[in-house]
Length: 144
Ligand code: ADP
Ligand code: MG
Image (cartoon, rainbow, N blue to C red):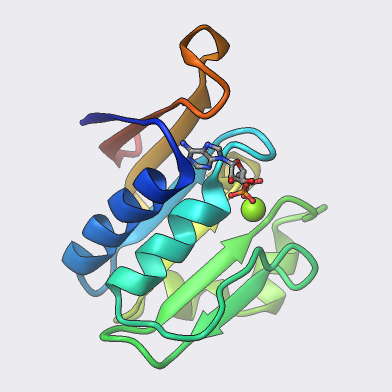
């Protein structure tokens, strides 16, 4: 599915709609350059899951966990990861293969440990269509 948004609120709303539909065990991968709107999307997604607290980029902690929604949300930002071993240290398997929902920013950096089935959300700018335009592609992916 391809969505187009013209402002942050629309990206938030899309995240929210998808968060409302998220099922236990799903792993969402969120791709896109710095400043494209991954955190905005995540904040909407968390809202859709019924999470009330503030949601920010967990860049310095890799994993931020939210327990106050309809399902637990495990928000990973692996931008600064140097080795997938760091993922093992934080016990990622319990998150990937548990009953909560995972959302991973910069998933390509940990490709080798991603589960077979994921949902990929990729957010792109297109300056020809304006500064606040974003194209958001959502697709189920199966590892080859
Ligand atoms: P990332 O987490 O991908 O680095 P952020 O979500 O933190 O990016 O920041 C995205 C920035 O882009 C915000 O300042 C937001 O207001 C702005 N923005 C402008 N247009 C959009 C849009 N259509 N969707 C999402 N964010 C947008
Ligand atoms: Mg971010």
